[in-house]
Length: 98
View (tube, rainbow, N blue to C red):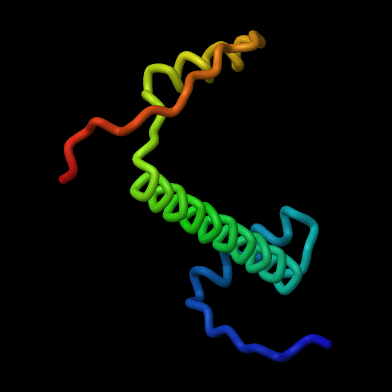
């Protein structure tokens, strides 16, 4: 069941949203609901991306194994060109810690 929430919008934003909603064939309310849903989904995806990056960083710190950037770039370019692309092997990170 929907829950009532009140938004106090500046007049200029209310006009912008009304115009955008009308051009999309929606009510301002429906347009704002859709916009909020879209932004919530994007924020959740962003949070998941950051969580994955932190986990990957931790894995590298623990294992010390990394891929050379040149090897990864070469593989991605080959795949983008529709080719198989030679996979490289992870190696011990020889970069000095900072």
